[in-house]
Image (tube, rainbow, N blue to C red; front, side, top):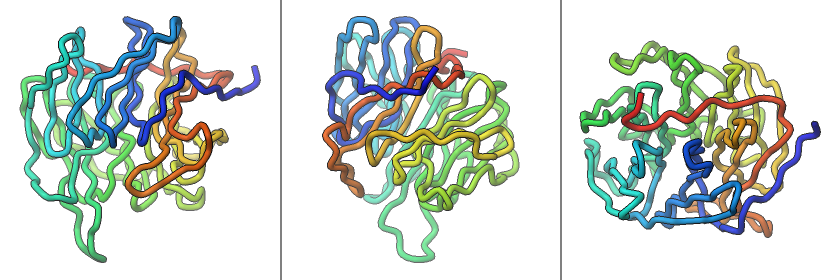
Length: 293
């Protein structure tokens, strides 16, 4: 089957991020990080919905029925998707105008792992924040430091490896991971500088390969578990941002994009749109949910 890329729906995001396939309803959820909007698109009917949150929103993951967790600027919040309410779960230990929580994803045990971004740093200035894990009961742990722009957290099929990129250095790192223990030793998974971009969003397929969005190169890349570049997929927009497998057979790759973020702007007519990539010949894994092992 030939690989094809198709625009899905008509939404236009300033900064589309954090797609999450809900197999229970057959819908894709994602966010416009700049505007503070959670969106959903029902694949079969095209029905859409949206929820407004205090911007910026770094990432989200679905939780138990009609709930989600969202990473707001300096706190994690629970979102009631039925009533629209937002309740603070826990704030991080950093209060700085240039630091906010960025990309995150639920682990296989139902915790939410997210990293921060620290913009406007002086040369040689160490970034504040780090990688955090929040448990369903609200307990918060700082797992790692030293990430300037944390992006693309995702887990191996077994859940025993955490991958997470620092987009500012164009490196993706790997850690041995257990949901009830500190991180293992940090090791380099892949350096994408030669590809002209750091990795933004990322996910892992059923074969254990990592798919990462090259946000400044207009491409999606697949890497083997050994970190070898396996495939490159051209996208119809300059700045794709994040991705997730979905569809009834988990064989569609949904890709978000941006039209105008704080640092990047795209001029294509489809910039900021949501896309579906078909014909890849691989399947993803069911999305982990916050509060559900």
